[in-house]
Amino acid sequence: MSPDDLLSRVRELAGDLVVESNTNLGDPTIVIQRDGALGLFRTLRGEADLDFDMLTDVTAVDYLGRSPRFEIVYQLNSIGKNHRLRVKIRVPEDDVRVHTLSGIWKSANWLEREAWDMLGVRFDGHPDLRRILLYEEFVGHPLRKDYPVDKRQPLTEERDPVVQDWKF
Image (cartoon, rainbow, N blue to C red; front, side, top):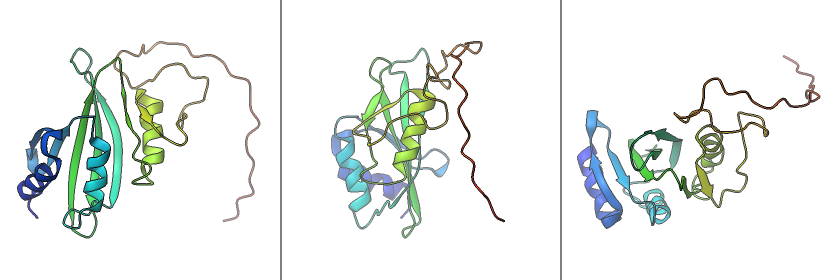
């Protein structure tokens, strides 16, 4: 399926959820509304002619000074059909949240935790939304463009490292 055919099929299934679409540099991309996105992701996974069986990335982009400020970006792949799709959801600065996709793709669990940790994106319904790269006492989200580069973080008490016997 060509990128243009893929976009046509997705627009057909999504209807009014699609805000815009393009194939810049051959990569099919859609921007969708937040409300109703979960149902569309289920459809993209379940439709036989699309078969997006792999979620390879979830991240966000901070467009400081723009409204809405954030875009949540999903990279979907179909291994069997050999096509991919980028899906974006724009969210405002005062409500940076979308629904979790961890019930659709297991890979979403850790990817969403990373987006939460680094950019402060809340994933409603996530089974374990906690920091994955930084320590729990860390204040803020360091990949936001307004995060102060010289910010000092609270000291934490020293923890015992987990010691394992590794045999190579």
